[in-house]
Every structure is written in structure tokens, then in C-alpha cells.
Image 1: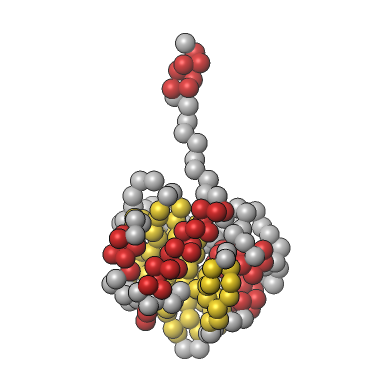
Image 2 (image 1 turned 30 degrees about the vertical axis):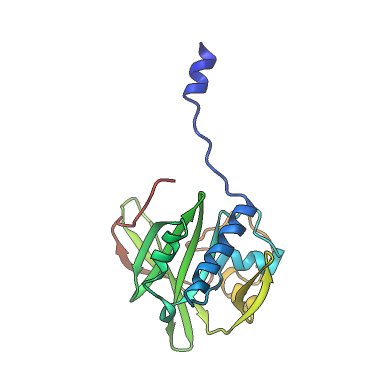
Length: 207
């Protein structure tokens, strides 16, 4: 009887995305964007995986793509949904700090939209930094960059031409050294915190 109740109330184990599943979703997300003539490039952990390991990072849990905001289209969300994805998060607006997260088969792909500012550009993310339900806007700056095509995961992706400079500006000069613990909010060297925040109003679905 004890074993029966132990099994009945056993805590459900959290799903841990596998490399192959992340790779599959990353490729599909890129292809969906290409199908509506939107260029995207490997960003954040996905770019780090390409440049440092030639593969998805062992402890990564999602895919990351960058898109210039001038290439945004209202077709993006319907096209992902048409292909079996669910819109999981929406942060910001087209005017400032837009970030979209789509999920399929329990694996997320984040779309970070980049905005031009002088000779630099930036993308935004939203994080809690206190016990309130306020999510604060953080800007991540990059020197302007061009894109080139490379092969990764047996598919063609775009990456910044000088990926090493791009990554060093984000992760530091030791970006080639793996770090199991990483603060995605304040760890990047290119972060600028702001006092602008949104209440907890992101679109969310249950995994």
C-alpha cells in the first residue's frame, strides 16, 4: 500500500530538452522565418554552441535566433502556429524590446528583435529583479555587424561575420571556456539595466 501511494504522489520529473530536439526546433524555426522572407541568425547560446562546440551546448535548454526589427512581419506568429507551434511568451512591443517565444514538443525557441541605435544595435529582455510581479527591461548592446552563411547542425544558418567579437562583447574574453552556471540577466558584459518595467502580463501556455 505504501508503494502504491508513493507512486501515486510521485513528483513529476521536469522535462530536460535533448540536443537533438533543440536542434530540430532551431532548424524548423529558421526555416519558417525563411519561408516568409525574414532573415534570422544564431544568437546567444545557439551562436555560442556554433562557435565554441560546433553543436548545441550540452546544458542548453532552448534555441535562440536574432532578427532585425525592420524585418518584423505580422505573418510571423500565424506562420509558426500554422506549423504546429504555440506562442508562449510575448514581451515588449514592435517599437521597443520585442521578444517572442514559441514552443513545440516542449522545446522553446526565442526570437530576439534587434534595434539600431547609432553605430550599435541592441536587443531587449525582461526579467524580475525583486519579489514583485514587475518584469524590468534590460538592453544588450552590440557593435554593428554584418551576417554570413555557415553550416551548422547539417543546415544553413546566418551568423555575425565576426562571431568571436560578438561573443566576446557578450560573454567576455573567456567565452570559449564553458560555464555551467550563468546569469542570463546580468552575466552578459553588454547589459544595460533600466527602470522601465511591465506587470506580469506575458502570454503563457502550460507545457
